[in-house]
Structure formats: C-alpha cells, structure tokens
Image (cartoon, rainbow, N blue to C red; front, side, top):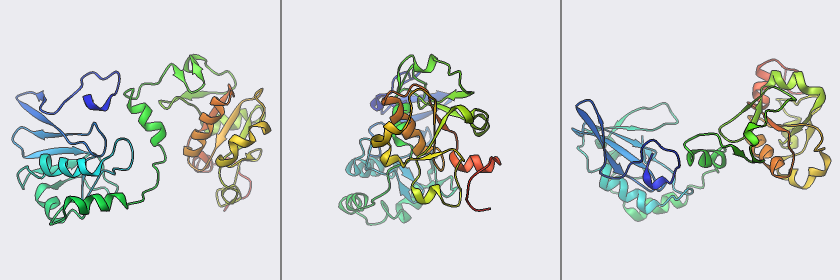
Length: 283
C-alpha cells in the first residue's frame, strides 16, 4: 500500500523511488498523486511496460473531485512520471469501463482527450472541474474499507464488538463494509419475524421490479425522519434495487440504535433473479 495513503495494516508501504523485486527483475515505484494522495504507478525495470493504477486510464484518467483529488497534481504526475517513459512503453491501467486492458505512452500522448496532444494544464483543470460526475455509489463504504486494507472491523457501525455478536434471527454474513447481509433465501425463511424496509423511491417501489409483499416503503431520503414507524424490538431488513442505497439505510438504522439490522444482498435485482415472489412488477 502507498505510504501516503494512510492505510493501516499493510504488509508493506511504498514510496516514490522504492523497488519491488521479483526474481531477477523489479518494478520501480513512481508516485502519481492527483486522483488520490496515495496513487502509485509501477514501471518495469526496462521501461517496456508500466502499471498506471487509477491515475492514467485508456483515453482517460482518474477523477479528481473527491478523496484528496487535485487536477493540477494529476496533470503533473502524468506528464512527469508516465508521459516521460519511452513512446512504445505499454501502459496497463487498474481498470476500464469498456473492457480495454492496455494502451501505450505513444497512444495516450496522441489521443487521450484529457491529457494528450496540445492540451495544457489549464485546459485539463477546467475540463476536470466541469465533469459533474455522480457520487460513486459505494465510495462511502469503500474508502473506510481501503483505510484498513479491507479488514472487517471489530467495531462496526453499531458499536464495539458488533461483528462478534452473531445474530440468531437469520443466517447472516458480516461484510467488509461493517454490515450484516442477508441473502434472498434467508429473508424468505425469516420473513414472518422481520420488518422489511424498501428505501427506493415510490415510482421504483411500484415499478418493473415490483416489491416484497410485506415491505414498508420508506425512501432513503425520508428514513431519518420516519424512524418512529419502525420497532427496535424486531429485526429490520433494508431493501433497494441493488443493495447500495439499502446499505446506507442499514448504517443509518444502526447509528439510530436499531440493534438487529441486515441489508438484502443484491437488492430486488437478485431477489427477482432468484425467483422469489414479488407484488406487481413486470412479468
């Protein structure tokens, strides 16, 4: 893990100029901050290939609008540490949303619409400031998990020892995000004894995916104001389309003092895909 990232529990922390040896070869560590403070890129010893993480992507780059992002730093990182490599150096980003796996310094210097050609630093900064990208659905869960190297905490959102208190009301799994999850089959088996809270918007509740028969519709934005509609004496299962919003709802309920809360894994998408009954929806 990068030393500048501040994560706890790493086996090894890395800084600019370090080397990672394997056999007779090594990777050179280059600090390429801008997407986050801790972004690192790794260059093979003969500079024939480099691994650019979330800094430089194929015809793109990491966003700079959260988690210590800074477009000025990202511009300078790419120019100084990656575009300075040989033109034929292959670049492998950490991910790509279109299934692409590799590019090259030559290609990105020529064709990257954000960083290539004659585009200057001010152009790039203006571009990044005006992307207006949506907030990542899982970023509020992912960032804390990253800071502990993905290890589940003994002190979950509901307080010390939360992960050690094995629930007896259903078969649950404790996730890296610090939440209990229930699978669709588990919810169907425990349905009579739990409160099911669907935190989707009204149009979704009555929309194509339908809803679970006993689900109480309380949109996520209204949940805090409507906590009084729920009993703290019975377990609560939160539900949404995919499990992302309902994870936020589960966290909110835990912080509000609900001791027995679980998120429906995969949301209504998985519930329907697994063939469980729904009210309404497309057939």
